[in-house]
Length: 80
Ligand code: SF4
Image (cartoon, protein in one colour):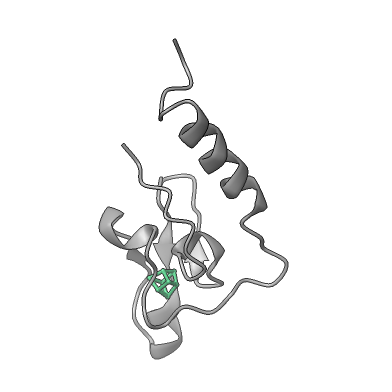
């Protein structure tokens, strides 16, 4: 089950997360500015973020928070 941590510094709200159609969790572009390639974001990092986190402009956790509330309300089971 995916953990919805609701932390403020997760990859989902980071300006370095790049979401190509070929990646489910996205790629991190932080090291691109240092001349390195995009890196696939691992599952254990995507909901936690890292020390390089920078908030994406105009991005909020509102939709994810609502999904988290629904999953909590239905004990993680949306489908019967
Ligand atoms: S790994 Fe760090 S820098 Fe990269 S998208 Fe996630 S929080 Fe941002």
